[in-house]
Image 1 (tube, rainbow, N blue to C red):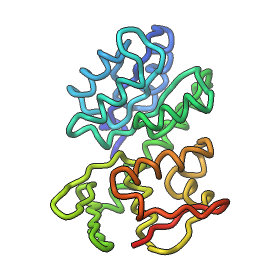
Image 2: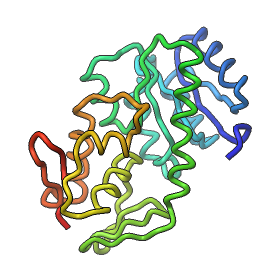
Image 3: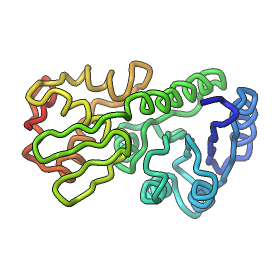
Image 4: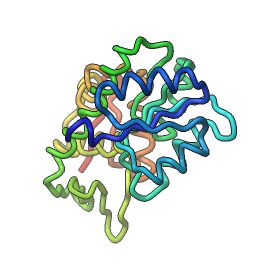
Length: 228
């Protein structure tokens, strides 16, 4: 996908940040749209269907966490890449962000060149998923449709956020194999993405709630495996 076709929605209540970040991303050739609060972000996301959303957390009218959850509930936006772009870097804030449906967490302040590099890294996932989405995998009563990005269990079709889906695809690629935490982070989140150790636990808990607790086995001190 060419840069000129990629749409980025930048959401922040500080005009200076909107101006500086927009300028740097536009210089890279991306289409950049802006919003100053969560309410505007949800409306803009519906209208433009962005490929990436950089979302502040602390904003008036509707904060970033709520906005992220609402965007994830919109048909057609479940797979948009969402990264929180915020000064709040505490572990509990990051965990809350991932639980709300975010793919990544960028802590302010960050130099423009570093931010642009981070954006490029996030957008590479668009290519990664397109190259993988050509198979239908069946494990027991679970069918994973990589092309349409959903999971089928019996008559129930389950839609998962991007990272939960990618984690499920990894674990079901070799049922019974124990995937080490380091390998999971590297495969699902990438070497260039810094996330807390609880990130995997949060996503596994979500999968257990949606797919079934008995499918996922925790191997203490090592990682996780899928019981097919």
